[in-house]
Image 1: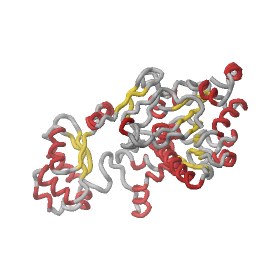
Image 2 (image 1 turned 120 degrees about the vertical axis):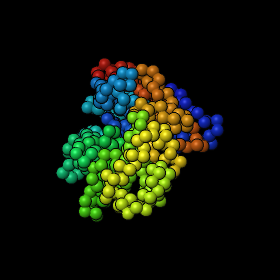
Image 3 (image 1 turned 180 degrees about the vertical axis):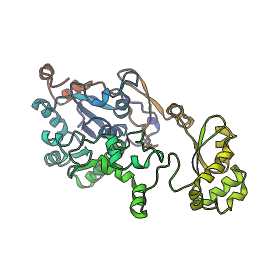
Image 4 (image 1 turned 45 degrees about the horizontal axis):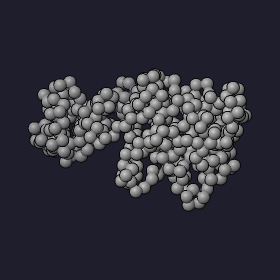
Length: 414
């Protein structure tokens, strides 16, 4: 089930101490994918040991390769979502190319696709068709709005789905709604596709059968909208946009410090407010004052609440404010930039950074969040160039060199 070579050796790390393999070793995934949602899902599978064969168009490949050149000439989205995969460049519009992909799928455990609505069905690569032909296969259709309904045929880019799902309506300031700074709809769908595959693999282990899995961006992000959705449906009004503040908790915001920093803090209950008043604000009388003693009162008088907190923190540097809040047991953080995240002392202390090979040389990358202490480190193999593995994978399928040359000359593969 693993034709061809898996690419360069992985960094194993704890291998000498491990007692278990990576959870998905021995699983083969074929993906006809692009952009973020499906590639993000299959990258999680690759990290956990699965072999992922990524099918790309010969004329440019996954269009996310062209989003930018920020990662030393490579696109940052592509670098993020595609390590550990084998790139096979095949023209699916040519019957010969489609036949090759169908042969790959016949030997796979999992198939994932996020083509435009209807495109996979026209090629016979939709989940229902593939699972009917291969009962043990788990096939995942990732779409924007699902396979039916009035929105089924609409284009579904991340920002559009953020708007349709109401995320933008609750994000930003009272004056200005904004989209999330990360592709939240794509990430949500990618994670549900990932967990759906894992659940289907468990079911196949008990029943022997695979089956189709459907995930849509709208369904995924609508689920993530649980708090504002239920607040609005059952409470009568949706939470207001409050910037960094919280619609129903106070104090919960960012406050400037003497060195130009911003320190965020969150008081979750009235016991914490008492500690904040006594130990940080040096205003113990506020612990029992009617205008501050309960969260309901603090939210109703948010401006006054924020003013007393801001007054106490303003003379302090950010490190001094954080130290004082930590000592009082108040949840707090500093508003970091992306550059500061890249040098975050917690990530460094826990050795969370690795280097991943790529066509432009080693690139710094974070280990995935799921840790299996009794297994080798997650597999973080190279980021492939377009078509880098076409010959190796097709050789593993038994396609002779002369046929590969003919297909390449005809533009069917690259």
